Image (cartoon, rainbow, N blue to C red):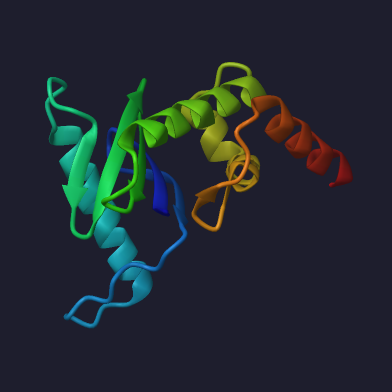
Length: 150
């Protein structure tokens, strides 16, 4: 099961954050949002400092991080320890292909200024921490249909 999905740039700015499972409560009594920000910052530090010769999988706390870098953006998925890493690496790639098809050559500014559309694409792709649809055409057709309704 997917715990959360993050999209961060090289500077550490989180451009997309979708949590399907709330973060574990820390002993210091911080709020959920503060704990999310702490985890996101720590994940960014781990992912950006990692050498390219290592795999794109990191065991972190009670879950596994699968990440991939495209240009200046890091796409990270946290999943259960027993889940298949390669399937989630393909999941990240499919999400990037969806963004690329929808925005025709996506860049960070597309994500920043059209974050509602990016969340809409993600919601059509993943639901409640599970992959809902894998057909690129189906997902894009649904998102375009939702756009027409708006």
